[in-house]
Length: 444
Ligand code: NAD
Ligand code: G6P
Ligand code: MN
Image 1: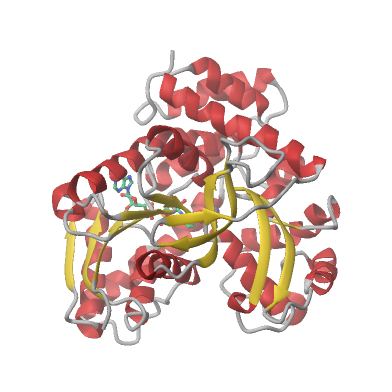
Image 2: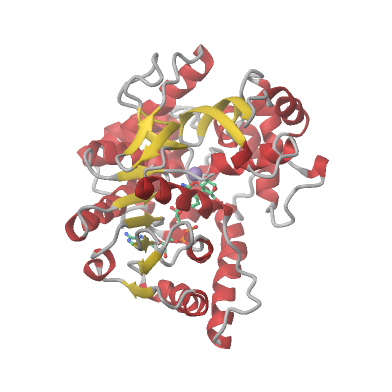
């Protein structure tokens, strides 16, 4: 057997932790593990997930040493990988990110617009702290980070920790690829070969082929033009999809109309159809509420069940598709596979007519030295214009954080395509400063 790995999941109390643990256990032949740790700065929240994971691990792989801790030293010592998915401020603050903008008829969203920037200014400190713990206690480790808002977090990593071994990733494209595979009748996203470029939650597929090189774009485009990414038309929509996600999949058909040469990331709807999104939003019950009443209740409830029964037999917890990507990435780094994956990297000429210092999400070959970006070439004016505006917003948000500058954050808000005027930007900014006073640096 190959190398036995040691992993810490940072944000151990996350709703996604059980599905990642189950995925890791399901892949032990491919990716052997000797030690698995959970680290969280809220030990009470983490303990419910941890106790259930401990039972699952005892049943499925008793050789794995399991640790749950809120001590950085215990959590980050002797690890090969840090898998980080923290949510600074938790759902309580996500609710504010979503609800405060809606008061001004502006998009209220976890990663897009003013809510995304508010979350960004909270996340940076937490993520950088975890990088520093990793470098202090396990200097050779890699951090696989999917803590949001990934675009702003990735730019902050580039600026503040340029030499650190951190890869920022997002699971959304693989979710869309799974949907595209279903549309063309293939088993899995792994049967596809794709080309894609953009920023995180802000990109386009330019090519989708099967493994024999057949062009699948015409078939997928014709489906998306009619149905978006909603799979009901082929009877393959998941019964577990929440109504808000179904709406998002539907909206992709309108986003697609803007450029029928490419297939868009669904998050573009917030920038291209903000009025429509605000119109259908319920300012008293946003996605945070849906998640609190849905995924959080389900995952924590099921963990409590496991703890009560002392066994995970018959559990409804499932391996997450989200997690497959993380295992593949860890394998690529550990075994130098050079697998092709979408990663957020410094552009550095890959998109030839775009800011060299922008953090872009593009295909990379991943090996033991990290991510090697593939060349994209020049991009069209429509995408370039949208991306230039958005990357400037993200850079200004990070500068606001590093310089403690309210002025820069005002500029970021005023520049965001989601906010209709500087007067609204100013009011929103003041209200979000107040809402985030326990988390943001002081802005002057
Ligand atoms: P969650 O609130 O259930 O879990 C987050 C955990 O992080 C909590 O237990 C919290 O106590 C902990 N935490 C907060 N600040 C911390 C800190 N400074 N140090 C250590 N732990 C800390 O959230 P969730 O809905 O499960 O999502 C977790 C994260 O994963 C979020 O950032 C979410 O946006 C992100 N996510 C990203 C992707 C992606 O594509 N990149 C996909 C899914 C989820
Ligand atoms: C996708 C995105 C993530 C985001 C998540 C939100 O997976 O890639 O970045 O965090 O959706 O999902 P939620 O169920 O928490 O609204
Ligand atoms: Mn994402």
